[in-house]
Image (spheres, rainbow, N blue to C red):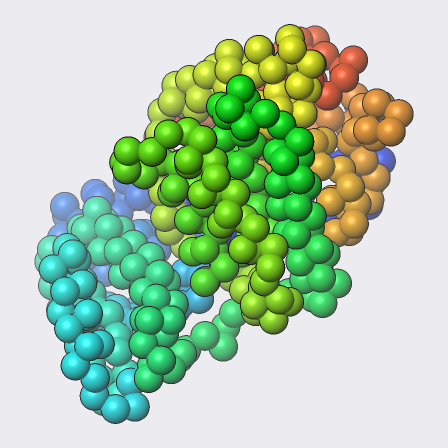
Length: 439
């Protein structure tokens, strides 16, 4: 999930509500944390294994989300790692590092379940499925003499991320299984949950109804961008979990599947996925709107050039729609360029925070309704809060210049005459950011 302490200085507004947005990115380490990774590596080479493990968990810990807890008693280190709906519990002594996750309860033995687990075992590199009485678990363990930081990171990441996904799939596919060990999941306040439910439907209905007014042959490319941007917007602003997230992801995977389908066919299939989501009852949506903490990103970081290229492509592709009087399609194509990156890559935190500003400006009604005070942009009057926007950007960049010393922003390049001009100029500055620095 996106950093819950996403607030930057806003001198004209009250403190921001404690709401999390989007997918968690672990590409957020401070200079101090990066140094602790180096310490862990050096200590391991010096065969100071216990100290190396301590340094590793210092690197892994995100103080803003409290995703990792450790407690040392002499040569025994107990640790807890949170990843979505699952909790990794483990310990390290002078011999081994061991970690385990409880996935589901199996009251009665089941051959189909065991077959599934056996098949899944072949897809794992560092971990394995195990049975403890009636509990289906995943387990990672290694001798401490081989527990270098890289092995710990990738082993615990596989354990945490696979478990977070497989627990939902197992309980969904096998009705004999029962959920287990999810008491740590924090329920959203009713007001926030209801606003998200309302906008979940609003965003889908608004897009589908607008597409129904368009020429599906002539504007097929623009329709694709809108349907994909919709999925990324739901992922970031509504942040569904579990089964609802899996169903929403189908709309995105339809487009990028390797099956030989025309763009029009893909658009139709994506639209049908969204229409089915509109038909869902409240009780089929609300249970999957909850708050969770994560430690590992489910996607990988990319060089900033990959992000810049995605933005550049969206700029080029939106131009025809802008010139031919389809401003809403043009706006959403620009949104697609950056939201695709937020969805698909583990972005550096300052980049995610800049994306947050972009979304707050493009969807002010949502943010007002969910509890934000004041607007950075008022569509009715076409007025931007220029000073607040500039202060917010500068605050974000200043917080990260220790790690990225070449970050720079030219506020004079930002255009405030309308939303299309603003988006184009704002994304242009994001495109030109230099993230060289401490790795």
